[in-house]
Structure formats: structure tokens, C-alpha cells
Length: 294
Image (cartoon, rainbow, N blue to C red; front, top):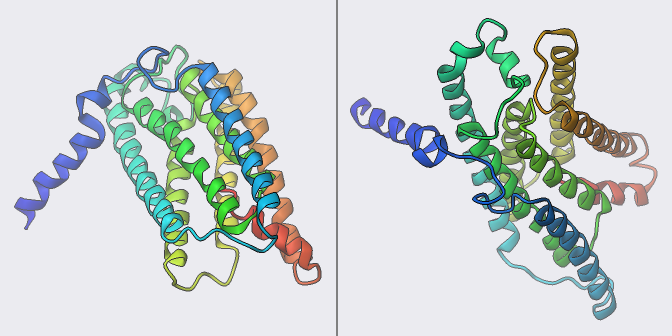
């Protein structure tokens, strides 16, 4: 059995971290699809306008409680997002390990592997294994936006927090590539791990199995955002109190503000759920809409 499994493991490692397309990847506005600022702003604006237009159109054409049956589409979307998140997690984990192995000779005197994950050296270019999976993660944000359309069709609800969260996550993942922003490896690892679990849970419940007795998705999002805050604190200390500095620090500052805003909103929803949820049904319904923000 070991003779069969060993080549299989080597094959998986090759296709996730050593394939020429991954090793030779380079982010640029000519070869990388969706890599221009105009594409980014146009796609986000289209997402917002389409969601709003669809919500208003259904409100006019259909009765208030009438829903559109989507059969297996939400479950298939959750399954696909879970699988692609798990693939990105495995890919960037193996790629980060390979990058540390191959480039440690250059920065080992000034950084540890953990410091490298949090703080890219100044002059880092968006090329190679790690940035390939960062690019795949960026593209997956557009697939994740489809969740909003499904919510509008299936539940007749439009969550402005979901619109904000999806738009901001797409914008931030673009900044990671455009400015070779530090700490993106750990954020992608945390995010894809949580997303693979959350979407697997959604697939589990979509096919008829019983869900958790607590707000599973919202709790996962708070844990994810809390991990991101810890990473931001690490980048702050490495950049301002250690020699060398971190690459993409201006984009990091903007990223920090947006992450803090999302975290405050999630904590606000969380407090409302446990403090006022039993006494205010209206607020509880608002919480349930925003718990689908991932």
C-alpha cells in the first residue's frame, strides 16, 4: 500500500506546488485575467447593481412570501466552494513550504519562516507559487458572489452586509496581488480552511441533514476575523519595530481598516443574537440574514 500511496502523494504535491504553470506564474495586466483596475471596479459595480436590480424586480413581480425553487443549485454551489477552498488551502500550504525551502537562504539571517509568512521582504514581486494560489483565491471571490444571487432567488432577501463583505473581500484579494502585500499567505490559509468547513456545513444542511444548534456560520466568521486581527498585529510589530520593513504596507493599512469594520459588524450581530435575540424577533431575523455573509 505504501508503494502505491507514495507516488500518489508526490503527484499531488507536483500538481499543487511544483507544476511549471505554478512555479512560473507572474501577476501582470497582460497575461492574468481580471488583473486590471477597470475590471475590478466594473465587476464589483456589476455585482452590486445586479443584486439590487434582481431584488427589486422580484419584489415587484412576485408575492412577498413567494420563492423561486432552485432544486440542487445551492447545494452544488456549496459543494463546489468547499472543494475549491480545500484545494486552495492545500495548494498554498504546500507552495509556502516550498517557497520557504527554496528562498530561505536569502532571508534566513533576518527572518524566521513565521516572520516571512507575516512580512514579505521589501521588493517582493507577485510571482511564483504563493502568488499563483493567491490569484486562484482572487478568482474564487467572483464565484463566491454567486451566493448573494442564490439568497435573493431562494430566500427573497438582500443583505447589505453580505454585499459589503463580498465586495471588500474581492477588492482586498486584488490588492494582495497588485502590491505583493504581506501576511496574505496566512490569511488565505485561515480563510480557505474556514470556507471549506462552512460550505461543507451548508452542503450538509442543503441536502436535508440537521444543522447545528448554534450560529455555526457566524461563529466561524468571527473566529476567522479574529485570526486576521492577530495577523495584522504581527505585521504591525514586524514592520515598525524590526529592521527591513514589510512589503505592501500601504495596502496593508487600508486592508486593516476594512477588516476592522467587518469585525465590528460581526461582533455587533453576535452580541445582538445572544443578548436580544430571544426578546426581539425582528433583530433575530436580521442576524440570520447576515450570518450568510460568507
